[in-house]
Image (cartoon, rainbow, N blue to C red):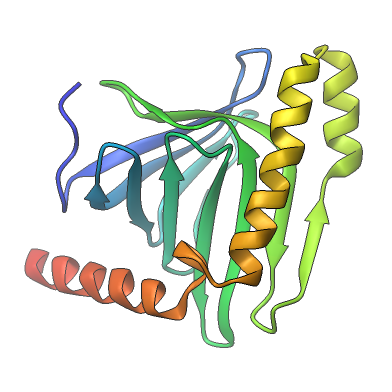
Length: 179
């Protein structure tokens, strides 16, 4: 597939370990692509759940995907500050249809005040048993939780305010060009 360029729109598809489609984001604006990462933005983006429910994202969110790390980051830009939702998931792949990854249920939420919460541990354990996650997958995911928390604690990459400002401002420039 041709790598999307700045300003292009792509779909994002999240799957579960058994191959079932979990969630789709229809139009994510690409802000940057490299060999290893893709940065984009969702702003009032249509999301479709596996059960057919649809909803729109409420605020602009910078999304970060990497080809080597087993997590992706959604930085939601809100009046009270930036909140982060981090999915423990496979590195992304890209094809003609969408950016794709497997979501492994575990999530880390970071609040504007810096508080961190590990979410959905019960759901992860339930699916780990149901779909017999390989021991290597479990080990990789737990190691990536540690990497992710280190990034959060040290303001690395998407957890830096300068990063958020840079990419949000680029989004505003690109979206202004469209009007």
